[in-house]
Length: 305
Image (tube, rainbow, N blue to C red):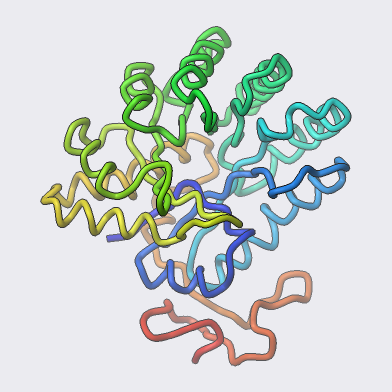
């Protein structure tokens, strides 16, 4: 079964992670722009970050047989810095035209401040203008209220719910998200957020319609293999293969294909690996022997023949 991780921050991960993900069946990822762990102080640092998402990281993923897409936006945690907002939103507006950008995101709420209301509204308007889907980050605190507040804002803006993915759902928020008509993402984390057994219970209750799972793996304690591990848990629980495939493959494709920048037919074809290729003169190999025209499989590792 081919797998798609629709929310993972590969900028924070290693080439070993890419190799392990490919061996586990992950052949496509979407990387949302997000907070880097400490506040950025200059708009130029956002531009370099956006450039890496549409450039180097896309290339790096391809070197392990994984197709890489991204979403761009000013995340809610940094939306409260008035010195950054206008220049960064100008950059977002510009970079939303780039190949490989399949949504506006992660956008939403953190502390649910008036500034976050304003920045969310402005980026929703950008998404509508660019004809792109929207990926929503729901807050860590008071998630239920944040989810409702987001849905209300999107409804007032006239955004069709099928163009919205509300992420980081849990048992409290999933019914609200599904009732709104939006897509529902679930982050499977080690020891927090959602875990595999809880996700199995939600699928048994709600089925597969508009439901996705992701790892949201980043620079913190997280696991880039949580999508295949959730697949294994669903299989063990007796969930039908067609239901699982809908959640971890067909739903992410259907949502992001609305951008017009993701070709479902292309995703059905294996991405050949050629580690002789360079990106602006750079390679992932560090002097190791390149893998060429092969999909990595156990026990192959980066640089193996």
